[in-house]
Image (cartoon, rainbow, N blue to C red; front, side):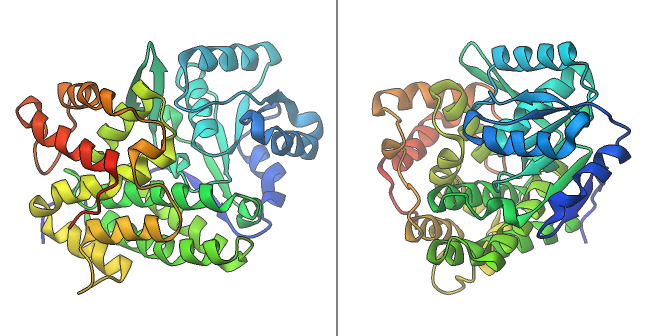
Length: 358
């Protein structure tokens, strides 16, 4: 048995079909009376639905969340919360909206209640990311962890299949990296493997029938587990590459995770054999495919993008991406600092072309 440290995160989770009905109770438990409801422009109707449900307890809606949380948007939302006298924020949507809520909490200390409608998992983490001058900066702060999370699978039934698959792969990435994190522990290992297993079974079911209630519930359950892993242990190579590609080249977040994950896992395979064994077991690909190949197949076979060239990356930018990634590396079981720049450039080339790992 290895030595480890485990710190539980103080989040309240309400899970189940129809659990949005508990929203008013949860707002009261936070001691809040004026909630600012956040969303992306595409989900403004859901934000309005939440505001209508809250009635006088809704201070207003801010439907302008966007990917990668530009600092300008964060400041605008923070100023709006102050102007309206909001004493909490409700983030309904995916990672972009949750990220905006975190940016508000970081400066104002407002409690956040998250209602995820994708499988991003960021609602379970104290990790924030803000993009300024083309660079995405990330950090950890207990103030940004949502106090309450309501997981209602019924709110994900209309999530488009393509977005469901990439969002699910994004969640799997959190768990996969958690298995070889520097501060991993047995509790997170169990949650990571179970989260990957749940999503690996749910995504094909959703692809076959998008309104499969059981598949949607399993995917949201897996996303909760994977997000919890990300919130409790550190990030490594995969997340560094995704933050680089998303923040500096404005590539779509979940799609970047989907494309990069198999390549990052292949890069780390020899340095983290126990993590690879757990991933293979969770995917059910023992004797058929490696962890990296199994993840690649899961994405490809369910219609997700597998190449950076298909999601807006220019081949001419790969050199710059490699330079940024190695300039300030995260801890990783296989080092990837400036001395490994050529290996990272090669990884990015394979990701650009969509090459299946061994």
